Image (cartoon, rainbow, N blue to C red; front, side, top):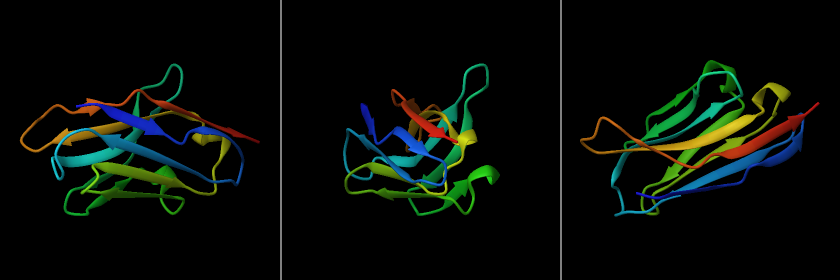
Length: 116
């Protein structure tokens, strides 16, 4: 599986960005798709995930500001990030999990920088 993430960049606090991650493979192949983020010296942390059936899970720190969605036909997951804060600055990684698998696949990461 190959993942192609895009949409990161530099934005001022209060601004918005939209991340996209497209996965190669057959339509509907992935049980779980989502986003994690990591800053230097810290562990990678959950941002949001979306199941094939539409169940969404968010980190408390992004609830009400971020919205995850997915297009199962295109094997693409999106992360709409609004009201961005400097503490949202991180490398964001796309993550996908195939049906029946216990280990997923990570994308290459895209940098999001929020200036104050």
